[in-house]
Amino acid sequence: MTPPATFSALLRASAPLLALAPMQDVTDLAFMRVLARYGGPDVYWTEYFRVHAVSHIEPWILNSITENSTGRPIVAQMIGNDIPSLVRVAKQLQQFPVAAIDLNLGCPAPIVYRKCAGGGLLREPARIDAILGALRDAVTIPFTVKTRLGFSSPAEFDTLLPIFAKHAIDLLTVHARTVTQMYRPGVRYDLIAQAARELKCPVLANGNVHSAAQALALAAETGVRGLMIGRGAIRNPWLFDQIRAAQRGEPATLPTGRDVLAYIRVLWETQITPGVKESSQVMRMKKFLNFIGEGVGEKFLHEIRRVATTADFFRVCEEFLDHDRPMPLSPEIA
Image (cartoon, rainbow, N blue to C red; front, side):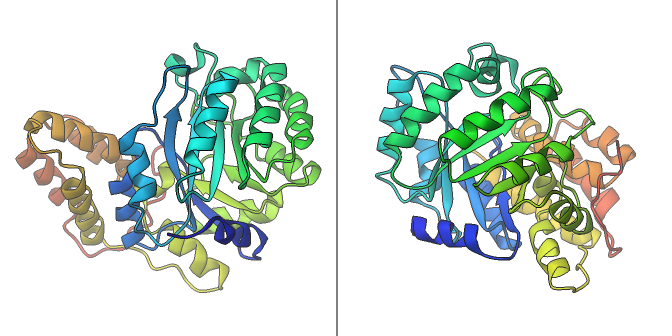
């Protein structure tokens, strides 16, 4: 397994650091292995470990750490608000081959933030201050934070930045939307640039990274250390290598429709759970196709969202993707 030192070296390197964003029920071990086939990120983040007084480390998330065969470091992310529990789990996770421990301050799901976890903590800066202090003392490897700009207003970011600076975190990832904004338009890249200017630690930009040209322009504009990509990597698993090619001044290689179709088949094979009924399997794949479809077109999305059987699923995919035309896979739907 790649030791934590490799992660530290990546933070010091000159090329933009490319990371896979943690996405619950998506970025599991199977999906990480799929991305690795297409070049993959420099660093992976796990789904978040749910932490509370009686929590246990979820074995299916731990598997993405202990069985990581990507050859790249992996960061263990936690979510919660109970300080003794967070310290306990952080110490437990450091016994495994993780590159860093990350605290989630950005999850916008109402079921999470209503419990004052994830993005919900952004309403309580003093509590964040206490949590970061305790975790900074407990974590002996790199300690990182992933945050949004604030809970309901970007103006809250001015209160959060001094707290992040105070605790000497090793990396801050900023998703430049608020919690209540969810994934709607209006990403504030100017505030990511503010974080990169004001903090001593490296900063990653997160939020609506969708093409190689846009990624490099964003990195240059904001002065960040690198980019964290989530939904864009589901839609276009070639994106990380396309960014690397653009960084070298080389033209990006675009997949053909049949390449995208083959990717969907790989996803299908790796997401199958034995014993799960066909309709449930199709429903799970729609989670991925909702993002892939943004790069295919509105008509494709309309049809794929209405299929219920394996045969119809692949019939629609083949109808739209069984061709050799290059596909940029940039989102065609706003």
